[in-house]
Image (cartoon, rainbow, N blue to C red; front, side):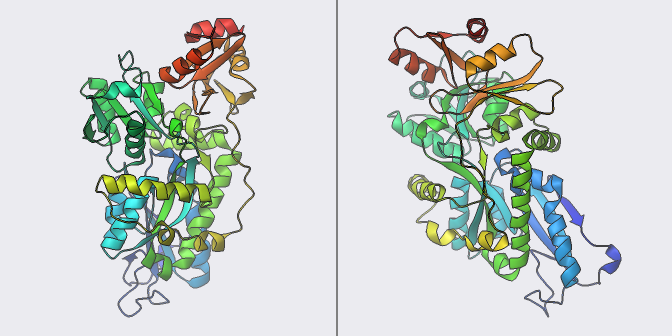
Length: 451
């Protein structure tokens, strides 16, 4: 299993020669796990490269907080707890393993969560949504990208083109909704290829597809590497998208304390990310092989993703709006979202910290050799600071959607003395058309105008 790891939490000498079960399954004489079994294995499915799940996956694993919480529990109840981490590229295989009773806790995006709920009920292995990892209230976590220099300049140009995505993913949901808004039939108007993110990225670079619709962090990674440019910013939908934590209902009932420990650990990881964003980005980069600059684009102080475990009403409302999209694709039937959402474990696990509300994104500069970043009131001020500096990464928010993007990959518009950045050429053109006298300029020209 990729990324498989078992972390022992108590000395092996304390173990008794009794059965070890996945998900805390005890021996046959103690089915409830109330004292018979001395070893409990908790299996957690996560997506290391889907980096707005890191507080329930990559970062949490590297910090060891879940293991710490379980070790404390083990000292009280005399049980040895082990954590097995299983890494996947998408949410679908996590759901498959959960419904087979082989994964206890998993994290995935909003559309996969609905499939998780539907499959769980269908296969009599019901699951519950118990927390959120990262979210964007406008939908900016998903992006459609094309190859550099592509003749495609807007979403309407995708008609009859080959587009790669992962069917049933949040990115696929964004693509479907965006095409519908553009007046294109998502089933017949394009030639959709169902591919894993890495396969789709390779296909885009090879020229075998015209566009790629994917979730965090693939669009940012490809843009950072100069292998793609943004065509459509998911935030244009202005519909929340998020990733969350799902648990097998049976496990949640039999091992409620273990689930509480996981959610306590997730809160601790969230606090770490929010108070030490640069260190968190470096840690995730080390664990995943992703560039830290890309991780920070999404998970930084002003990143595209906001981290808060709370099951916010806006997110649950958006989840309900996602159901018809999946039903139309025949991926689910009816999904009772209210029955799927379970707020009790998070409320029980620990008092919710007073996280600040999501603020407007600011321009941000990360210099080489620096362990901190610097924020700016405007993109123009950032461009002044960039001149002559040893830049590791410079970030600017889209002037309309607020989606953070790399300054040297953004599309710039000079509007009088102001300089505005956009994720996509279409966004820049729309702004320039609505503001007579403004003009689109390249990055070097924007830097010159700023100084």
